[in-house]
Image 1 (cartoon, rainbow, N blue to C red):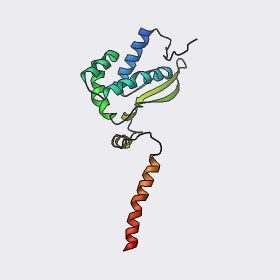
Image 2: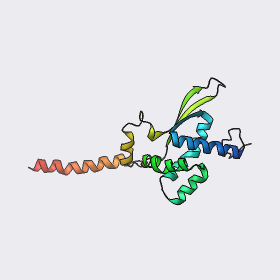
Image 3: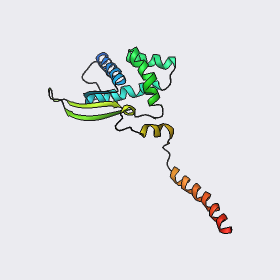
Image 4: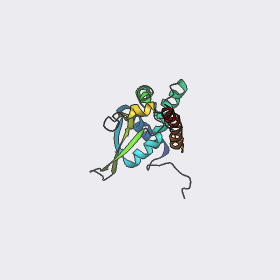
Length: 163
C-alpha cells in the first residue's frame, strides 16, 4: 500500500529523480518553456513553484537554499533577477501545463510546461493588472462594497432634492 506517499517516483531512484527535476527546473528557468512528458511536467510543477516563491525574496539565505536544489549559478541568477521581478505580484501558480498529444517515437504523452508571466500571447496586459491590484479570497466583499456605495450615494441625492 502507498498510503500518504505523495511523491511521483517517475520510475527512478531518489538520486536520479532529484537530478532529473533539478535539470528540468534549470531548463525551465532559462528557456521559460520546455516540452517533456506529462508526468515529468506535473512533478516539475510541484518542484519548481516553491523555488520561484523563494526567488521573490532576494536574500543570501534564499539564494543558497535555491542553489542547493538547482546546482546551477546561471539559473539562480536568472531566477532572482528576471523571473522574480515578473512574478512579484502573483500569489502562486507560476507555471502552466499544456498537453500536446503523443510523441511519435514511443507514444509517450507529452506536455509543454511554461512560466505563465513570460507568455506574450496569453498574458498581454493581464500581468500588469494583477501586479497592481491585490485581490483577497474573502467572501462577502462585494456586498460590503455595494452597501458602502449605496450609503455614499444616498446623501448626495438628498442634497440635490433639498436644492
